[in-house]
Image 1 (cartoon, rainbow, N blue to C red):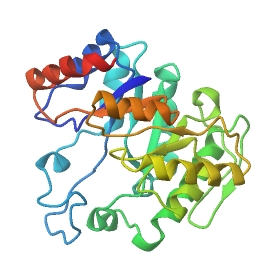
Image 2 (image 1 turned 60 degrees about the horizontal axis):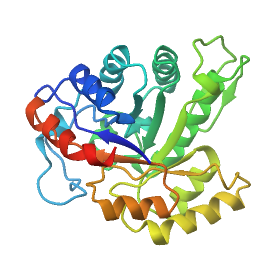
Image 3 (image 1 turned 30 degrees about the vertical axis):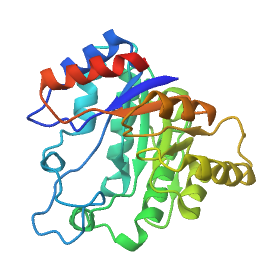
Image 4 (image 1 turned 135 degrees about the horizontal axis):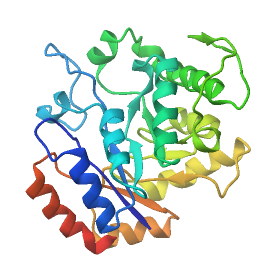
Length: 275
């Protein structure tokens, strides 16, 4: 099983360069970074985990800039987002960022996407909360048109692009795409429609939910062996990882603390038993 990691990198934590080097030297599979452009002070949306919102949410580094640094000092480490809030981006600009990072890293990028929880953050980006999932799907389709091998036009409900020359291209035509979110028919339908798999945060309840996702996937005509389930932000134990392996999971993303170098490297030492 491939053991990857995620962390809220901020202006106060270990740096992307130091962390990426340590991960690759220790044999970890990948580094996934979250995204929040800003956290409005006047916020009525509750923090999904309950209680006060941790301060690192308002201090996150831009994931693409940070992953670019990580790519430059590694050669094997997988690079990913967990997650990119696609609805909050201009899709033409985002397609270029993704393609450039994937190209410069030699095809090591995984695009983890999601639809967010912070209504105020999304509203500042002009996102209508009720249609954010449909907007995200539309923007993914537009980006895929720009990544196509030949100039391809796209016109959707929320955006359009003319047939264009747009290079570089992601390796394989598009990066591996995983959708994050809670189990449910709407999410599973979108995974089966245009993604390569699921990023279930915390990894709970997979015994019940994975068979449902597989059924949705196969009904959509997708290859049964191609579905990828990647438990995300997991606090590991030997029993938990063994259970994931029984479910056919091939990659797990472990949670690192949003801390300084000494603390993060200490946790990596603890996690080394799983690599």
